[in-house]
Every structure is written in structure tokens, then in C-alpha cells.
Amino acid sequence: MKALQVSRVTKSYGADPVLRGVSLTLGVGERAALMGPSGSGKSTLLNCIGGIDRPDEGVIEIAGQSLGTLDEDGLCRLRRETVSTVFQFFHLLPTLSARENVEFPMQLTGIAMAERAERVAALIEEVGLSHRAGAMPHELSGGEMQRVAIARALAIRPRLILADEPTGNLDSATGEAILDLLESVSERHGIAMLVVTHSRQVTRICGRTFEMKDGIILGQEAEG
Image 1 (cartoon, rainbow, N blue to C red):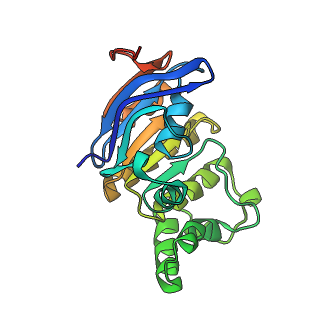
Image 2: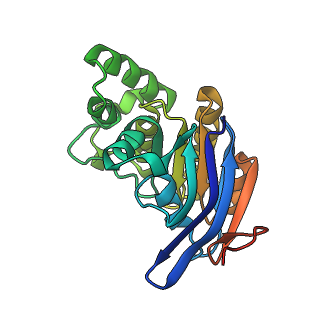
């Protein structure tokens, strides 16, 4: 079973085609970079994979589950239980501590309090922030906030992590440390990652790189 299977996906907004027959696969635990200029369709593809948007045609399967068969509640469950996203600007809840931000997605899925506490402690330690677990987001550096965001992404034990410019808001040294952490957690937990990026440096932790331009993966034939 593939962690991710995207087959001939198309998406248009009005008369403007954004995705034109995109296909790609990720194996279990595989990491791949998705690169391309602004407007090439990267964000739209990520939104379709994450169940935020629906393609016009084509099939997206995550861990064998076809997104096209899911209603809105089903897509919501998918995002809570199977797919996590790491964002460029962290998107931590400002009124919750680092520990509480990591715990929050587990509360949404009804995980028991004792298990939540155990899992949070382990994840905060894994990303190297045990000493900052009680800190609020505004008290954390950019690198620390991204570490919290990665721990939060891991909390639901996802099959796939979508990382949208995860180092784009960090200085180069901090970005390198975050890349090392993403590589480490992917290998340790067997989680597939698709990393959208403008930075060639990100590709060093990825086994493959997909290049997008004008709504297609280069080397693929466009629809229509």
C-alpha cells in the first residue's frame, strides 16, 4: 500500500486550469520535495491532498483511502487522524502553551487524558523542548515554534505529513536543524512526507524531487 497515490488530478478555478493531470506517489516513510515557481499549482495540489479542496477529476488515495469517497465529515476525520500539516508560519494557538498545542489535536479525536499526557511528554522530548513545554507561543523563537508544530503534527500518529515551506520563515542555521528533525521523525515513525519548498536545500532530506510548472509535474503529459 502506498502512503499517497495521486492519479491524473485536475483542478480549475473558473476558466483557469491550475492542475492539469498531476500524478505522483509516495511510499510508506518516503520523503519527497515538491518544487516550482509561484503559480505552478503546488499549493492547490497540497490543498487537494489535505482534503481542503476537491479536484475536478482524478483520484487521491491516502493509505488506501480514496478521498473522493469521503463526505465533509470524512475529510475532517482524515485530517484529524491520518494527515498532518506543518506550515511556514507555525499556526500555533496563541492562548495555549507548547504542551497544550501538542495535546490539542488528540483532544479532538477523543484520546484518553492519560494517553494524551504520555504522548505529549514523549513528543515534546523528541523535538528537544522539554524545558519549554510550559512556554506560550509568543515566548518561543521561530525554531522553537516550528518544533512545537512538528510535535503537534506527530501527535495523531499520521501516515502522511504535508510540510508547506517548513523552513521558509527561519534563518538558515535554524532551518537546517528543522530539516534534520523532519528527517529524523520521518524515519523513526515511518511517516511519509511531501515537502513544498522553494529551497533546494530541503531536497537533501528527500529521496525524490517533483518539479511543477504550469499545473503539471515535469515529465508528465498534461490533460487536455
